[in-house]
Length: 247
Ligand code: PEP
Image: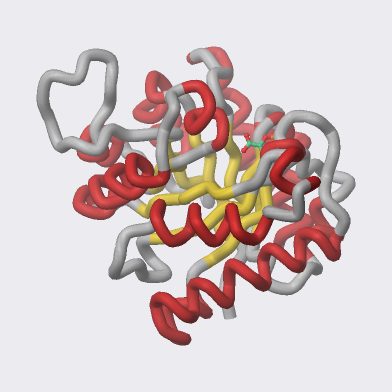
């Protein structure tokens, strides 16, 4: 039985003054029946981890570099995330694939670095609207899974997030059937590649305009093991409702 994961992605939002939202969330959710994660901007990881200490909330990052150390001005390494108190890292988010031209191979190298540091990688995959309209969704997702995820994944080191690019930040969501089709496909690919044991235990999240109103319904879809939530993770009151819906 896979425990659901409610993962928030704060993107480029949040200052020290936002840490109160984490304290409020901890208070609102208590000890829920799902895992809870907030991926803050890098500047907040350490202070967020201190605020979240002894609560049900884990803290993570939104990206890391593929190298351990070195001359990479402005970047952060997986070890730095661990050192700051992070446990997870989001990799291959569509905004990074688009804004920073991250390829599947680049995401795979970053995932290897995250694993070497002891982080759980949340590897994002998803099709654009153009690709969906051309009936290429499963081909695109299959290719992204094959190349973005290194060999030797385990349920502890890997989470996959299916995030249709056209649903992120738009208020649009796929139908439950569309979500189910892609999640079943991802599950089958994970089982084929990593064997039934690992393939069945890796969590597959849905992401894209998940909110307090639609989270419970989306969570009923087979092979949906939680959500990766952008906008609705910024306010404790909203995210607490999503945590509740996934518990
Ligand atoms: C995201 O950034 O991963 C995301 C799903 O954003 P939103 O929930 O705002 O669509």
